[in-house]
Amino acid sequence: MISSNNLIIFYSLLGGILPAIFWLWFWLRQDKLNPEPKILLTFVFIAGMVGVEFVLPLQQYVQVFLAEGVATLSAWAFIEELTKFLAFLAIIFWSRRFLDEPIDYSMYLITAALGFAAAESALFLFDPIKNGHLLEGLITGNLRFLGAAVLHAEGSAFIGIALGLTFYRSVFSRTVALLLGLISATALHTLFNFFIMNDENKNVLVVFAFFWIVAVLILLVFEKIKLLRE
Image (cartoon, rainbow, N blue to C red):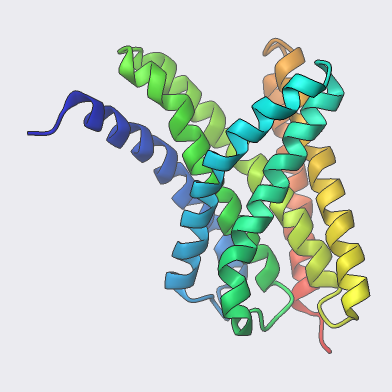
């Protein structure tokens, strides 16, 4: 017999993973002519999910040393962006031969990001589902579907774009690109957190609209990256 706690965990994971799978399908369509191995994408997605377990204690540790405000939000954002990158690296390091075109960095990094978003969303859904607040859980799930999942994908896409644009360049150029990608991803993430946490939901749709515009710009850059040749 399945216990109530196991059912809560199941529904929380379902509510986190299903929207992430939709976004994964959306973003991976950008590489449909030469798709990545599904088994490898699955491992990267799972690695992204596991990353959440390391992020939470690190964020709590950092909060002890930083005053509340932009510094804390930036530190939290950097920890999340770095963790998603390391989740990608932990799997791809052993399968580097599959990074055979510039767009691949973005595809794998977005996959790790959406795995991270899935686990994070499941954590947010756990308490509302446990306490029987289904409407609250539904609202939380929808907001994270519209905002947080897109944010995580965009942050990792920034890093993927930086690495993709320097795909055929020197190791030094790719290292600089990685650092710039992490910085830009952290800045975007911090901006999102700042407005969501300080706006009191007054202009939440405006914030989401801004990040949707960013998503469109990312798609346009992807088209440029696909045309890169050695």
